[in-house]
Length: 480
Ligand code: HEC
Ligand code: HEC
Ligand code: HEC
Ligand code: HEC
Image 1 (tube, helix red, strand yellow):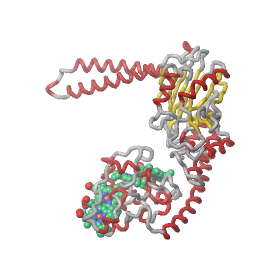
Image 2 (cartoon, helix red, strand yellow):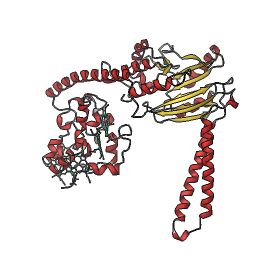
Image 3 (tube, helix red, strand yellow):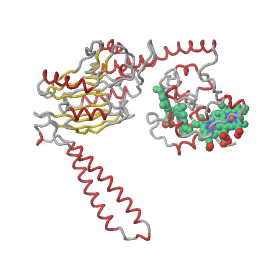
Image 4 (cartoon, helix red, strand yellow):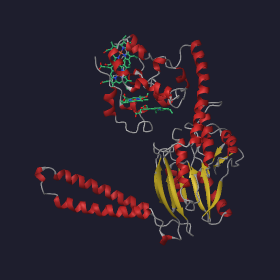
């Protein structure tokens, strides 16, 4: 969500660029991060509502329905259909096998009928009465229908299926011209032609925008595929570099003086040639080639979302409003949880002691810990007014992550955690310590927290240069 107002700014500026006809597309899975969202008002639904409003504002041409978009039930989307988000799915059907959304839409671009359709990947949790038909049963008829109603269309498929499945589709249905994927295990995928179909995707979470510049010819057929040759050249360069490094290393040993000189020179020349060829191919890929004018051509650019990108003011206001709604909601939840805990004091987090308890016997380590930013992790959220935000609390609080992995911890309890656990405290790294504090010799603590522990929070999204060996000394408590 944090990046959304930058993303809005970026999309608005990118699409203002030039006066070309444009399509704004998203393959789906944009609303939720889990497959099943509880009923009632909660942070995830409020957040999804805001995303929908922002997408509506941006004026998307088509958005595929992904299984994660169905997590709050199909009615959540249908209710929001009034809001003009152009949801598309060819294979999401109701109990009577009628499509729940438009199966495709078409738009004339450069005089060509561009058809955008979408396939929803199967969901591990579909609500009763909802059918997600497999792609291989739906596509033949769908393509027939499209081709019967449009003339020589350029067909784009938005897909939340896996990259492997998209490749299978490309192999079987060469009359789909472009597949835009959303495989969450893959990042950006440079365009790849499979059996005449172009496959590509940008990584999840909106870190990149894929800018695809299309020029249609009279034939629905791609011009020469530059990308494959480029990939081959780059592979060759990789192998050559490896050989060269190995020889240079050998040549560095005094006993080998002069022995490899001619081979090294030969490889260096080869490398120079290869580099030239790559640059020329890359430049070629940046231009539309007039010799191939009767075929379809493309140029792709992945534009990354820079931290320095300005905010879009309107989106930023919407996000502030969302933040306040979430705070109000969670203030109420917090009060309810406090009442519950007072009535029934055994519950979640009971094996933990809290920092002050450890301090009694480990004063030296506690003093050190207080000097690290871990001790202020919760304060950081308070300063940002994010201390009632369930998306932030997990990594800025003390939890027993050695017993239950972070992603599986119950969330709302965090709202009611006592002050002693409001920080990345001792027990984050050393494990829950209530028993240890009573019988230290009998119940031992984890002394050295492994890399895996750190990485539960120091993920790429939140710390893009985490190196365990260099970061560890900064948080290692001193010995007695
Ligand atoms: C009542 C005193 C007491 C309290 C309270 C206490 N400890 Fe300890 N702790 C000890 C003693 C004594 C040892 C040494 C035990 C041993 O070496 O057998 C120890 C050892 C440790 C070690 C080193 C383990 C090792 O293998 O060398 C860690 C880490 C540790 N404690 C963390 C904590 C944390 C975190 C807390 C709070 C949740 C805590 N302790 C609370 C007394 C205490
Ligand atoms: C529960 C989540 C969590 C875990 C686990 C965690 N960290 Fe952190 N770490 C944070 C947060 C959050 C911050 C930023 C705190 C702030 O500034 O508000 C941080 C900050 C840091 C910093 C900067 C601290 C400073 O004082 O400059 C270092 C270094 C660091 N962590 C290393 C580690 C290492 C090494 C581990 C594993 C042994 C680890 N962290 C485990 C959440 C975590
Ligand atoms: C997956 C774990 C995780 C989540 C979730 C998370 N953070 Fe953090 N956060 C970190 C880590 C790790 C750092 C330290 C990064 C570093 O050392 O460079 C950090 C650092 C920060 C800092 C910078 C502290 C400083 O001044 O240097 C801020 C501000 C912050 N987080 C706010 C938030 C907010 C707001 C949210 C919720 C929208 C959030 N975080 C959610 C792990 C997380
Ligand atoms: C970010 C992770 C982290 C946090 C949080 C943390 N520690 Fe540590 N602690 C370490 C590391 C790393 C070591 C060094 C282990 C080693 O070198 O084997 C260590 C060592 C220790 C030791 C053993 C010292 C020795 O060698 O005898 C104790 C006791 C200890 N910590 C207590 C605490 C207490 C108490 C707190 C909270 C006030 C705390 N730690 C918070 C990471 C952490």
